[in-house]
Amino acid sequence: MRFLNSIWLRFFVLVWVSASLLGTDAAPGESRQPIAFPDPRLEVCGLPGFNEDKPVLRRLPLRLKDQFRPAVWSLAQAPSGGRIRFRTDSTTVGLAAENPDFSNMHHMASVGENGFDLYVGRDYLGSAWPDATGKIVKEWTIGSERKMHDVTLYLPLYKAVTVHELSLDAGARLESPAPYDVTHPIVYYGSSITQGGCASNPGGACQAILERKLNADFVNLGFSGNGLGEPALAKAICELDPSCVVLDFWANPSAEQYASALPPFVEILRQKWPRLPILVTSPFHFPAEDLGGQVAREQSAKRATAREFVKQHRRGGDRKIWFVDGLDMLSPEQTDGLVDGVHCNSLGFSYLAQGLESPLRKALHHRR
Image: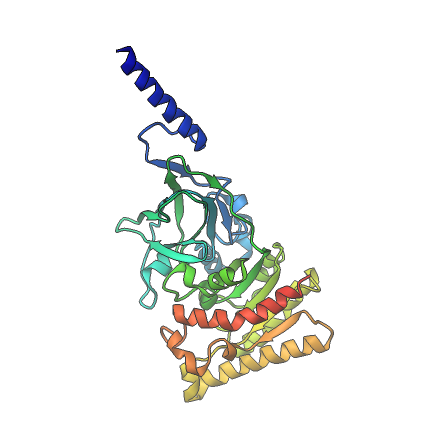
């Protein structure tokens, strides 16, 4: 009997020592380590007001609500561009979240609109989406052995979501992520195309692709149908500390509205940052342009407005503003990148990212 007691004592000491070395106080037999959200080791990126409003995941802080039109504020509840980043040696990652108002637009995949993507390093691993009740419960296997991984969860592009908890293997380590190479975010302002419509999944939006290519943080201020170049959004950007601003709001205003809105929007930014890199994009190719008519005239006028505006600014001594021709981002030969003749599918966003990458690298090289 003493011999058996000695064996059991040694067994429990071994279990206790193993748990201590793994940095957990999990009891024998536990298989999961719940991580309540938020947690200081889980870095939330792309949502500037998160530290003020947590655990709510939205793109603009609550204290600024009255400065925006109701449509803009409503769209800001969708955490497009938001990411949860961390490092772990867990072989699995679990997610418990809720998306009670999920829906499915006719021209957009449900995962992109309502779901999450999980990336390990720069590699896409899989997605999660709501069930019929709006609940999201998912567990991914991210490796077969214990070693540290950089993990990114991309949040839904078009629907508000609540994250309850993440979970790891019992005994797994959890650490804050490595910082981005470009820690001051690139801020993108625009329309539904900027917001991510109609990427198949959140990690397939243009800004997320560029994030991985440049290892650069970003904030997505694209507002579907409502990217009108309003001063309130320029002032909101002035509360941030960006490395660069990309103005991509040509899609929603008329040609006349665009020509009227662009100068004061840039002027607000220049009053705050005289030397901040700014990229002004122009329309990419819509198939309807080939047919002429009103669409062709509108797109041509906006393209000319953006080009001439930047040219005049540079002649006036502003050397930190650049024009990016949308036709260099998605050309007439690349219309297979459109889902409805207007919005990009994931292939289209890959085209946009490829066309924008070089100008962004140039701008970031010249940042203040």
